[in-house]
Amino acid sequence: MIFSFDLFSNAIVSGVLLGGFYCAVAVGITIAFGMLDIVNIAHPAFIMAGGFIAYYCNTYLGIDPVLACVIAAVPAYAIGRLLYRFYYLAFEKRGEESLQGLAFFFGILFIIEVALILTFGVDYRFVEAAYIGPTISVGFLAIPWRLLVPLIVGLAVIGGIMVFLSKTFIGKAILAVSQDPLALRLVGGNPVRVKEIAFGLSIATAIIAGALLIIIQPIEPSLGRDFIGRVFAIAVLGGMTSLPGTIVASMILGISESLTTTFFGPSWSPAVAFGLLLVALAVKPAGIFGR
Image (cartoon, rainbow, N blue to C red; front, top):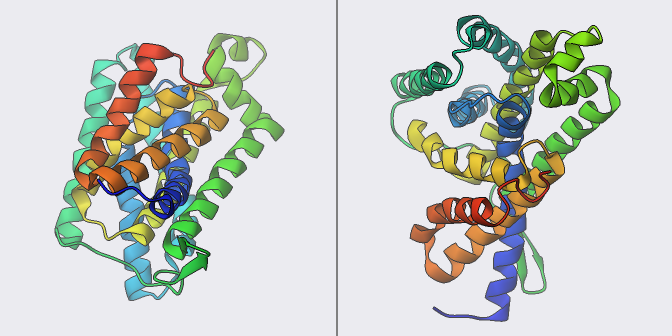
């Protein structure tokens, strides 16, 4: 292992940039898993779907990948609402959401993955944009635009969700249903409709995260499995329902992975998320911002 201050500083900067991308990846899981108590194991598959939507729109229609997925987030939101409605009627309403619901989302994951393989094949796909390739140099620090754009968009997505939850009636209802659905029903609210809207939002954010992923690196359909451990580790480490906690946990994971990759090699990087998850469960099971 070769250590230098320049190498260390660049690894920290890359980790912060990567953490911004993880914010966009994990915010949907924080909503679905943390606030709604829905173990949507298919969330990474929706991220991959977003990545391939960005690829198709960029390659065949010449649309910027981020813009393509922002537009695609609208129908994705509607699909998310329909998916939750089906999940509620088939499992949650009957009190069978634990094991059967988990199997349901496993099925969704594999259906999306197979559909992407049959449509796009197993080769790696990438996009082209003016900001993919150039790097900003500040002294000895190198800041690649392909990581800076995901940081900006990722923080904008999670910031927008935080404003929505704190400033709007529906947002406050989502926070209320995450704490006490019965109390929300007693004051005239409809927990099912509120959860339906929240789940739609989580799927919409996954589609946008897919565009950020394909900006950072080429993708293939099964790549989403690599993010299952990461997104749940961030949600648990951040405190399950806390969006500020999601930001902090994303940055911790990003910096940890970047340092590990720089000084110990990329092979150790996937183990970082699970290592942090085990440490969090042992030291502070409620997470950094958990109560």
